[in-house]
Image 1 (cartoon, rainbow, N blue to C red):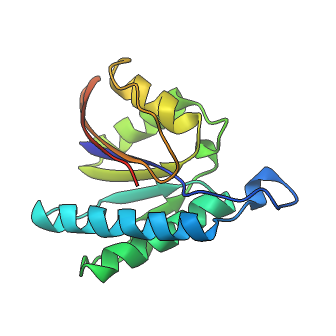
Image 2 (cartoon, rainbow, N blue to C red; image 1 turned 60 degrees about the vertical axis):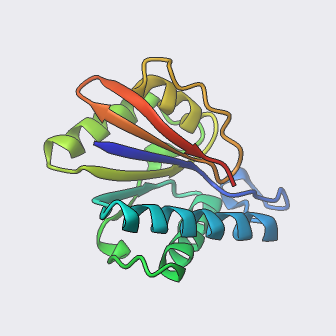
Image 3 (cartoon, rainbow, N blue to C red; image 1 turned 60 degrees about the horizontal axis):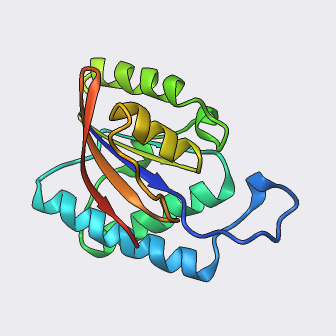
Length: 162
């Protein structure tokens, strides 16, 4: 299973609470560019995503929207609505082992390509957990890490910084 772990785009701080923070103009731009890169990569590899798991926080939702726009700009086509799941367990304080267990379930159901859009520290902790502490990634905003995860061991394939 390939797992694409993405941290949300740059967000502002002018919001009533953490969950309501929205992307800045820079966050929108970098996320859309990351979508173009990811879309082209998936096209080149002839890959379709099986599942997208996204945090319910506004900035993560906006990241997904901009990522899809970027992917569509390079003609990557897929029905994203049918594969997207908003999951409360992938907020900043989410448990990486809970996420890993869910990914294992998805794999048992046949998923081969999963995109996770979340926050620090969860994205960092999840990458460490999946690779048994081999992937020490500096997750800047809008960073995407690809991990090839088989059984209980994952290998970091690449990191795409904005």
